[in-house]
Structures are given as C-alpha cells and as structure tokens.
Length: 534
Image (cartoon, helix red, strand yellow):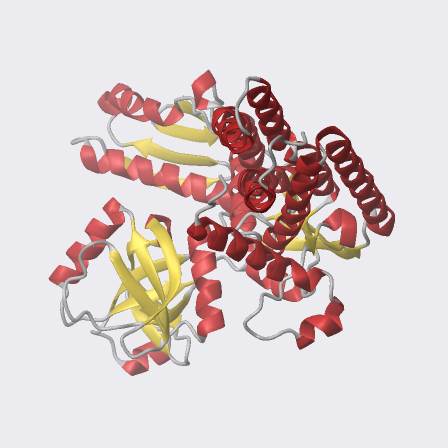
C-alpha cells in the first residue's frame, strides 16, 4: 500500500487531467473557450429541451402510398400464382379502390384458385407482439362467379399505416440522433402524424432537409443500346426509365433493381483510391450475393447508383465485386458524404413526411430548474463532505478529494460525449453524489474491523480494500445494468437519467477505488502512523 505502483500513479493522474481539461470549457465562458489551445477539448454540456428549449415539428405522413404499395404487392402475388400453377389463368388483373380484382378463365379451376389464394388472406402479426400471437386480418377474399376480389380490411389498412409510422419514426430517430445522446422527443399523434422535438437545434431548415430526404437507394443496369436523341426526347423502351444525372444530363437505365438500399447493413464515410470523398457500404448476405453475381457477369458494362430518382454515379464494372461491399463516389464533398452515409445507414423513409407545424419553443424549466439543480447538487455535495469528515476524519478528507474528482470527471465525460443534460440528468448527478462515497464507506468500515482485530495500519488498509472490492464491484455492476436497461428501453428524459447515472457509476468506481487509495498511500508513506485515525 505504501509503495503505490508508479504506473498506477501515472494512469490516475492522466485520467484526472483529461477529465479536468474536458470539463474546463464549461467554466471559462465563450470568450475563454476561444482562447484555449486548439489541441484541448472545446465541447460543453449540451442542455436538453427542458433546460434550453429547441425546435418542435409536427410531421404528417403520406400513408396513402403505403396502401398503394400493398395493393401492388398483392397484385404481384396473384401474377406469381398465375405463373407457377399450370392451367390457372387469371385475366384482367386490376386495382380498384382498396381491392385487387381479376377473373379465372376456366370454371373448373375456381376451387384450385381459391386454394392458392387463401394464403394471401392469412392473419398477420403486423403491429402486434409476435410472442403473444394474434394479429389482424389484412386481406379478405370474395368471389362473384368467375371474378375474385382481394380486399384490404379496415383493420389491415390501419395496421399498415401504424406500421409505416413506427418505421418512419425509427428512421427519423437514427437520422437526427444517430449516437442516441441528444435526447430528442419522438412520438406518434393519431394514425398519420409524428411529433418531433429537438433540443438546441440552431438550424431547423438543415434538420428538415435531413428528415425529409427519402434516401431510397438502388442499383440498376445501364441501357447502352439507346441513342442520345431518344434519351433527350424521353423515348424509354419497355422495362426502362430515363433518369437525371447528378451533374447534369440524363441516362437510360433498366427498371429492374439489381440490389436496393434495403439490403444495406452498414454505410460510412470514406475515400476512394484517388483521395476523393466516398461512402463505403456493406450488403447483407442475400444482397451481397446478387451484387457479386451481377458484377461477375457484367464486367466492362456500366451500372447506375440511383438515390431518390437521381443517378449519383454510373461507374463501369472493372471486376467482380465479391464480399458484399463497395464504395459510392460522386456523392459530393466530405460533409455531403457524411450526411449520405448517415441517411443510408438509417434507412429509407417508408412514407414521405410533410411539415404541418414548426415552431421554436422555450425551455419548460430553464433557469429556475438549473438553479434548483445546482442548489440540490451543492446541498448534497456539502452534506456528503461533512458526513465523511465527521465520520472518518482524515480518511473522510481523502474520500472528499475523490468526490471532487468524480464530479469533474462526470462533467468532462458528459461534455466529451455530447450527452444531453436534462432535469432527470441533473437528478442522476445528485444521486451519484450520494452514491459516490458508498464504496469508501464499505472500505473504511472494513479497515476499522481489520484494525480492531490487531492488524497494523498498512496491513489493515490493504486488507480493507481487498475484502471490500468484490462487494463494491457487485453493487455497482447491478446498478450499471439497471442504468443500461433504462437507456435501452427508455426514451428522452429517461435515457438522460440513465446516461448520467451510468457515467457516474464508472467515474465513482475509479475515484473511490483508485484516487482515494492514492491519497491514502501518499499520506501513509509520509506519516507512518502507529494507529489509523479512523
């Protein structure tokens, strides 16, 4: 104990110094931050919507497209049945209102047709918990003579719209808060609206552009057997479409999608072999297989990368691209490729979103809450300090040094990670202050017992830390797991409380076990007391 390892001393000092430098920008003001050296962190605590206000959006989802897509899919299933079953010919397949209608050419195939069509009408677990079973019946089958009708039920339409809203909310969350630290508020309103509140947003127009971008990515074969004149006149052949190029002009591509953005598992900003900004992507196994097969059989031919109906790149295939990965060039500068990578990773919006209402809102709690939080923190901090000094004397002073270091580290790491601080987050910090000395109390009580049993001072301290460590570790692990569950399952303020609690647990473990022990080690090596003043 008296000979505290040098590497531990250096490590503790480095961590404390780093925490202090990370917390420093919060205490020097804007003018002071401007004078700080460039190599120092300059991030400050990000306050939540309840403390600093932000932007409020009411978004309307155009869910009619979802119903149209569902009907197209049903019509596609009917055509698949027609192709797969011999002698079963469906005629005049058409979409009318919320139904798909068609006729059977042969009367003796009516029962076979019903048998083949019934799977389309099976219940679905859409919008329900599949572990609990149940679901809603989306499609009903009716027959009038030789004519069949597959109709969407009212419950099915509602379920489709709600599912689209849920998926759209998840995409918006990943775009606006990809790291999960901004504590946005995102919730549905009715069947086709979404409420979004973003704390501290200083550029609502930029935020809206990110939210409303569809980000539908697809890869298509380029049609080379078409003249420039036909392209200029919009004369697309069957199965083809003419799309604009990002840098001007137009190009004809085949409608058939080789691979879509739905098969993407990862997208990140990168650079190509010439040092130009690019987006590196990774497909899932099925998408990677299709992409590899296409590139292997089309070496020397161009293929188009289409984003929201615009061709952003049309490279020529030089070799088979196996492994399901590649890069997208021509997406713009570094900032634009970063944004594109975020959009692609978050996924495409299942429905278009329109802004129905936008307003800037002031803080719900603001200065009063910040002042109350500070007061509560100060009272809790002073109370803990007095208790430790009165209960454990010099050992309590060592614990208080660790407590101060703990608060600095919490502030530093919250600033570094740009975690948003809300009123529940302040409550988490106040709770951490009370919990921070728990480990020291366990250790000090154990040291008292060891000293009563006849151990010498240094041996009593060593044994006290050794015996109490497992108990301290178990208690903090269980609390940290609770914080992790709150973060995963909670949203907004609940996540804010979980973040500050989790960071507080980690920093208090460090300060209580290492910082306190370092202070006591320095005192013991210098004073060499015959009896511990505890």
